[in-house]
Image 1 (cartoon, one colour):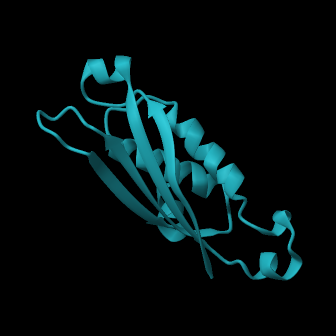
Image 2: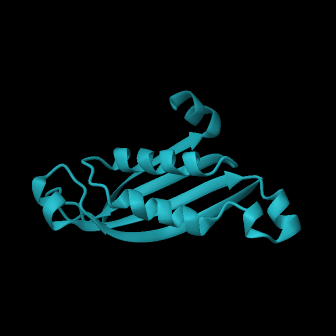
Image 3: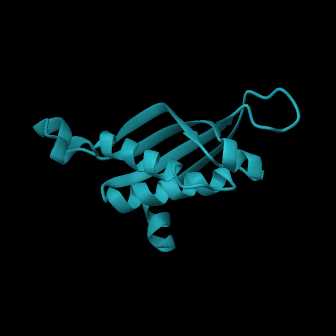
Length: 125
């Protein structure tokens, strides 16, 4: 088993409970961790045998374009997309952070982290 991490992906998106947030937008940081069997990729050095992290990034980028009220919703959509696209994915964790959230004080970020296992995804789909 191996772990692939894509860290500190930065997006400007239009998520939030306040209408202004969905109009003006904000900066978001996404961290992704994926567990998969890397044995074949280690042996062949062939991208076809690996979980392609460029594709994973593209999936996250696409999900960040869809407006949501809640960080939880964004995180779960990202996980759904990853599990649907990568049959070899066993476990995935995603952390979505909204930078400088409008909460009435000086706050660097608010984050939601969600983890899902393949067997749980199969029950949901």
